[in-house]
Length: 349
Image (tube, rainbow, N blue to C red; front, side, top):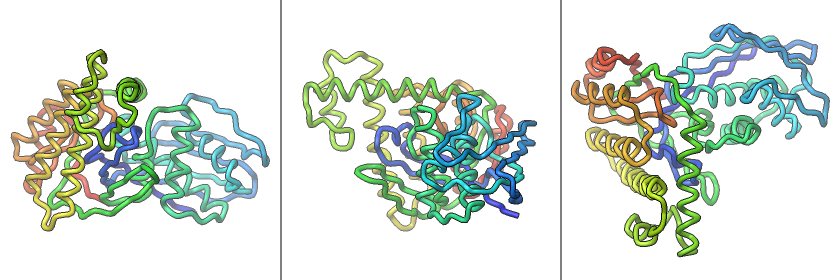
């Protein structure tokens, strides 16, 4: 029997930053995609998906061939095609079952965890060794590049690497494990469905168009180094929404830098961490406009119950928020439930 798992994640700092090439700080959480299965001689993957009442039968392609996709986000076949292109696709099939405890379409990276777990399962099935970073890269290609999606690499790397992690993407991917904060994070699922692709496209396109506009005036403009004041001095003639999105990206970049400094200071001060989380959320809600009235209600309930801070999680427009409670996590969770959310006290894994 082959058994693999991959966790979901929360983004502590750097929401909507990874696809711009800016760093993030993530935490893997104890909500998982689990896959278990037995090899079989026939070159067929028989996949049971009991959580959604589905099943898939995938005939492994011959060398040099690709599987046709049956949906716009056919991630199981996407992983197969990426592994086939790299020469890693197994020569035998399997009967397997995929189960999960990650909220679906809620901002906690259920699809990325699926791609990471499925990549690991197929590599294991074929006897191929790959480190966590390699698994993350293959899963990213299968989820994002195969389907032309606008997301970055944060989710796949956060799931594959685990723990609390600083991830930088330019000029090359670099990762650093960070200390785990004292206390607990409490996930609050609003139950509101998200328009992930629509929001990602709107925010990414707006920032990239703003960057292109400012670079026409100043070719050395850089999201990594330009200050907010320098950007404002250049943006006469730039449409208001793009100004707002660019300002949000620069503010969030600077908040992450303050958070990274905090993580590198011992002992880590929980209340200051919570304050920075809430500051990050205010930019996401104000400049990026990705929050909802219900998410705001859940966050207010959490802070009123003693949470040090919190933020929306994921692309936004619904889905989940999380609160950080250095103490009294159970009281914060009850407050989120009473405000209409589904609360989960998380462990970082």
